[in-house]
Image (cartoon, rainbow, N blue to C red; front, side, top):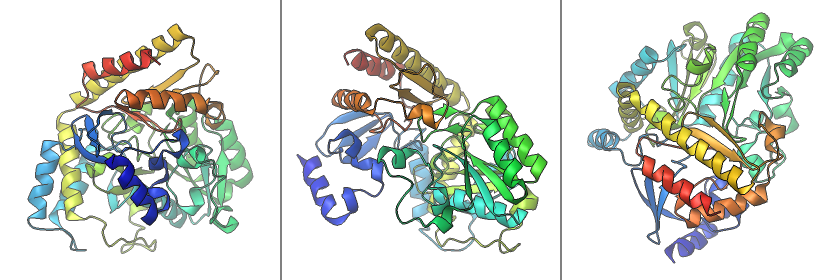
Amino acid sequence: MRNLEIFEELKKYMPGGVNSPVRAFRNVTINPPVIKKGEGSHIFDEDGNDYIDFIGSWGPMILGHNDEDVVKAIKAMVDNALSFGAPTESELLLARHMVNTLDNIDMVRMVNSGTEATMSAVKLARGYTKKDKIIKFAGCYHGHFDGFLVEAGSGVLTERIPGSPGVPKSSIENTLIAEYNNIESVRELFRKYGEDIAGVIVEPVAGNMGVIPGTSEFLKGLREVCTEFGSLLIFDEVMTGFRVAYKGAQSLCKVAPDLTTYAKIMGGGLPCGAYGGKREIMENLSPMGPVYQAGTMSGNPVVMAAGYATLTKLYNNLNIYNYIDKLGNTLQKGMEEIAKEKGISLVVNRCGSMMTPFFTELKAVNNYEDAKTCDTALYGRFFHHMIKGGMYISPSQFEAMFIGAKHSEEEIEKFLSIMRKF
């Protein structure tokens, strides 16, 4: 029982035995598998159990675990470099590739995580507009920066933490909360505070209250109201960038943000993030402008090599997106059919290769309040059943499932076969 032994030891040295709360599996009342190895669409724990992985490191592993080209790029780089804290050609390769292949990106700044990317983008928006207030949406999670931990969904919702202790009121007094997919709630805030709103930050496809796509009316309305009041529109594509489409959710909804944040997939499995946008905005960053943001490990050469290998492979093989969307459609339809057969109330939301099964009596899940109607106890029983069948899915009702290029039609059918026995 190596899983249990290791996890019990971990709890002696780390809070809850984990470095990120959802990994503790507390919401589903079992000890988590301790993962030893990944290969393609599979992961293996310390007890030798084999799971088909539908978490994919919470999104990044779109090419599967230990992709041969990504591993090759990492090995080639570590022969020459681990870290310099200085400019490198690997930074140039990744930055140039992103600027040349993405829409609405003239310049980028590399960071180390999605949290760094979003908090830095907000700081830049405030510095550029010389305004203080930011609008975010109930249920959207943009990292653990103090100013975002208000109705933040995801782990905060799973762990039933009301915001978070340790966040002073002064840190959130300039954070305004609107309702996701309700443009009128945004316009109302602009009517009241418009002259002091620096920007709106939004997940164009929410993934941290479960997968909930923003409607066309909602996202286009955000663009219009931001333009009207001289505020910046920030798309948090940490989860959706290079995932729902190579160019992200903005390419699907045809809305151009002023700033975009990235992480997860762009690191190829290593810690990485970035934010970018219009040149006139980005040039306000130090050392060119007055907005200060720095990071010793930002642009790490090994991470840049992994990211460049990942993004170029995706860009040169765009058929991957058709393939994983097709698998996603098969999985969604199959789950819906099984639920109907068994009389289980289930709504499956999907955008491309990311999806969430919501155990709710509602006919649709469009926002945070809808998501909170879910039967989390039923989801917990579903999770237990699926993981015992070798399907590694989120231990939280309020997270996404992810499909990658190494998943097969046979594995999707196996998932559905095991679900049918639930």
